[in-house]
Amino acid sequence: MALSEVLIEFARQSEARGNAAYLLLDGAHNEGANVHLDGGGFDYESLFDGFPEAAFPEIAPLVIPLHGIDASRLSSLASWAMDQGLQFPCLSWMESQFAPAELAAHLRLFHAVGLSDNQRMLMRWYDTRILPVWLAALNPDQLDLFTAPLLSLRYLNRFGDATGLSWQAGKPYPLRAPAKGQPLIELDDRQYAMLVDASTLDTLVQHLKNVIKDETNQLANRDLMEFVAKYQQRAISFGLDDINRQTQYLLLALYTSGEGVEHPACQALLKAPPARFEEFFERMQELPEAAWEMGPPLWDAQPKKANS
Image (cartoon, rainbow, N blue to C red; front, top):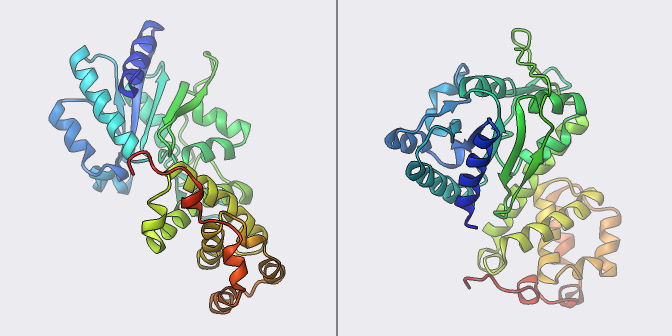
């Protein structure tokens, strides 16, 4: 079944159950999505409405109803949305008994979260790189609040796979606004750290793609992401908590399929790595040539991209 057909069938089944189906599109990855929807005559609700960010409708997250659309237009909308979701981490879909305005009003309650230092943070949970971490980071009471009007929530992950969660019907719907100026949810330091880690992985991968573009372009995105995620966590365990030192560690790992970082000289360095990047860089350059010859580059050891 084509991915666009997944959305069409989802809409049909939701309607058969007496519920409504919705897309949620992160406009920050699809600047001007609102213009496309306006041109097609499709209804939507912006999650920026009521906030200062409403001044930027072209990057707003949009709740798009899939019900009440004839078959031809539904097919067109589903195909376009899936194309966006496969290009960018921006697409999720959900089933609810709520009307569009009610559902959007609920989701706007999570526009920002509180932090333990009395600060507030804009929460871009609808970015599907962040969404699974957001769902995992919330405690049970917070998750119940967030998912109250949802019967299911699915999304395309960074690899283009559809995944998600379903819940039992009949949950309470606490559509209550927080006290004025206060976010509905406050994250503790552990939860905040989980969300920060989710963003630093993508930052590191993109940085590595810039540093060794030709080499990383030979790897399937899933293979690169999983490898970097594994070795980034190892780097952090050695106290390498900044992107520059992590990059040097990952370069050795990538050029040796992970073997070079196991060389005794590298292991000795990692027992007490210099905190200053310049010193750490010099020490990495001083590693013996044997460390760089312990394994083949990852792009030679892994299957090539299908289109390469």
